Image 1 (tube, rainbow, N blue to C red):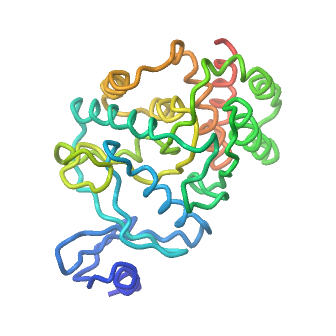
Image 2 (image 1 turned 120 degrees about the horizontal axis):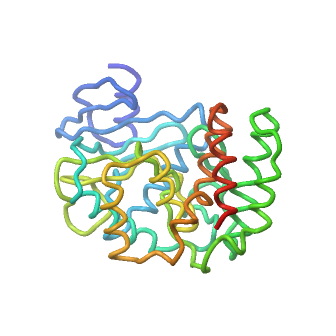
Length: 294
């Protein structure tokens, strides 16, 4: 046994039968359960943020999420989602459940999950929560576009940033009809959707036994619901049209949402520019130009 077993036993109170490899690592407990054990020492504060986020997005009727079995400042232990294959049925169900999650709401745009830190993470870069702003355009510009434009420019990955300044100045007219703050997963790319082996059990967002699809690794906060859907579109998701259909069936989107997709993709594209540079800078600039054509 490595250091994992003592950590898992301390945080869960259960005995470890054996350890499995992989990233993140897995352990099998004496009662037969398989758990996932993640270390966040390299990103201080990421584990408390993820644990609070998982608890916050586990809403009744929402997408299933792994249950947090134990956490401290560096380690997170959750239940394991058995792998499966994507299907249109599961995608449509996920869309319906995602609409329920968004409808659970938040205290404001930028609101952190209860108990979650204001200085949170998305991937391996910082993300500030806790703004609790009443206006989405003002908050999105100040907390989700401008900080990452500055970071990418200072790193030499962006040249002329004028197009982003235009987007921010015009956000009130580009944003569409006002909407209340939604409860977002916040990092909803296809890699954070785990397709399970069967239909979702029951009507709760907690637990993942028999799930059709579950969500992991949130960067949860209060935001605009179109942002989660735009991020799913950014990197591709199997049967995305079926997911959208299920979502619209439960909570129809405001008119013009398709044209606003590039606006909502600015944040994840700028985050990727900060993290990886390269071609993401060009994609962020292109998205900004597309957003201005609304």
